[in-house]
Length: 408
Image 1: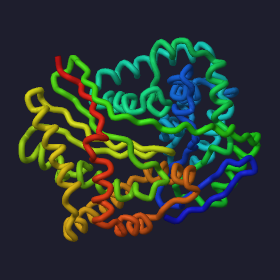
Image 2: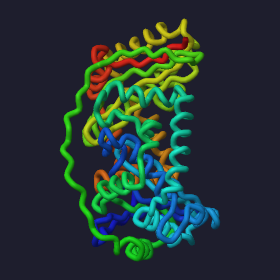
Image 3: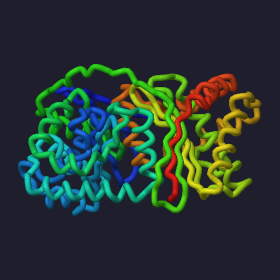
Image 4: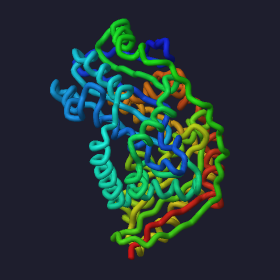
């Protein structure tokens, strides 16, 4: 994709891609998330993301909410294990309004005590609502299982008891330690010239003092396969099985992405969907997923089924594993798998909000953004031998962990 970049004097990087249309997208992404917490800060990164909207030196929370919404725009935020992102969607004429608001929220938040106490209840309600959704909760608990007692394994939301204990000073301390200018990227996708966008970034962000993050010692990821069955008061069995996988810098992640899509990706004709749903009617939903992190990754499969169909479903999944480990894809099978993945990537790039975020994230991590043609070239370069090697490495039953919510 075509994009232009610049580095402000304080180290904040900016990236912009010009697109026609009335709607624009921009945001700020920070290379800090729940993984940056120590054990006594569990949930603090996500709490901070909420607290940023509670008031600044010149705005109360009400005024923050209305600044973009009054002109039909929207601003939101989210926290992952390794990033925090504030992003906005608005009519192209409101770039200045959006960038000024992002700057105000990130750098001028005051964290009023009364607002912070109210927001604790909102977060605790979010935690409790998550517990009512087994299809979401189980993914967090699976990573807690395979990364036991490691920061990467802790869930993002935190625990209600700890959330209640945090105060304004805790939020400020975490922000000062992790929201440093060398870990920030401002991204934009919209109908504005790069020079004008750069001028607005200079206006609202250049006077922020430069600050570098302290180098964190990387801890070695420890993985031992685990199997755990949790009695739960759900109607169905819910299960996740999987293992650790390639990190974001590993070139093999492209072949894993293709294998993942072939096995249980978004399409109804994936191997697992055909085997468990279409041929046997054992499941309504089955999917495989690959998530890359800075120094590790997670590959997993999720499905929900009735109690009496659980063992049969599991057996069919491992049968598909065996096929992929023992049989190299033929040229026609490989070609079809590549075309399917390429089509899905191309369609995904039609979602401008997603494109804007992924552009910012890619620039934050790799200092570059691959075009669709570059992504296609990487996919086209995958060989049957690479798929076979990846399958034998990651689908080894001896390396697979299993977490099951058993219906009571």
